[in-house]
Image (tube, rainbow, N blue to C red):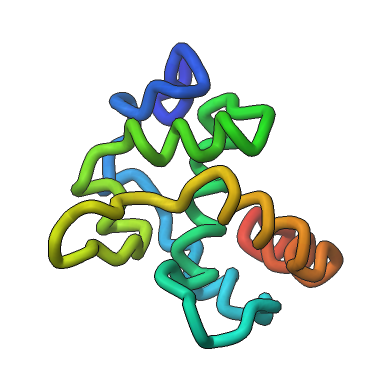
Amino acid sequence: MHPLRPRCAGEAGSLDPGQVADLRPYFDRVSDPRSRRGRWYSLTAILPVCACAVVAGARSIDELAEWGARASGELLRALGVRWHPLRWRRTPSSATIGRVLGAVDGDVLDGAVGSYLA
């Protein structure tokens, strides 16, 4: 089994923060379609979480959110997820992920992922 691919979509234990390449510079090319007001998670935190979840086998919005919820704090920090001071908010919800992925420019996102893979 590949070391970055956990046995099931929700399992994040096999991912090591040291093994996760920094995708954020590539995702910086994607403009955030949301207004600044009310944002807690940056786009460059949501997209790497989604990318890692997909590599881990996630196939739905709910599985993307579930992967994030099960990821270690160290891994989430490496991906750029911002912590709430009271710790009541840890990772983006499925509703947030769905809204963001539905609004982001797919062609620009595809170009960013393609650049990373090249």
